[in-house]
Image: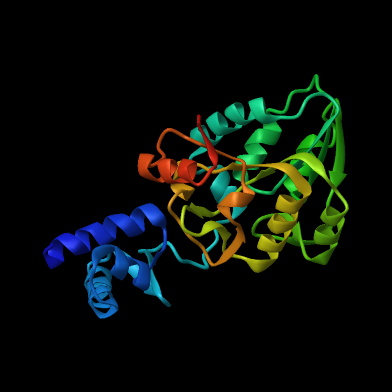
Length: 255
């Protein structure tokens, strides 16, 4: 294999996996780790990827930047409405319990929760709590704590401790990024801690992620793929990433 062919293959691999390791790539292509590092340097200069310790991630994928909740509501709104509609089939039956993580995709689900079904809903999201406070049939439990203005979610020890005492039928979570190689990630450690607690508290874990989140990776991982039962996404999802998620044992629903 010529160097150009190998570099193209490495670029495809990092796009599909979300993260690659130098040693694994060297073994896969039968070259030295020094050769792989030179390939990664070439690809980084071309803007294909970004080198990190021990490997590489897609260019622009590793970031500390968070978008404000109001801006996220206006982004890919139609895709999020379709995802929410598809997620309704995953709700527990009457008398069931669910956790709603903060975010625009979970807020879209809160907007369409059936009014004729009795449900216990726990959330750390101020906007979602306000939306459901007067909803018929909903018993609302608000997870308190310090509220981050950027996401309008309660974070810190208070919601984490409260979630340790809960066991819900389904936990619906959003994510800033999801990759086959590294799982689910978000830029902020405090947000990640609450998300981890929600994952532990849910008997079934459902992730609502529009297609722009697939293949992206952020600073803090809060769940591995084996922690997730279902990912609901939209028709713009990269088929290669969807296949990799399915290969990892995650059920993927395309709205």
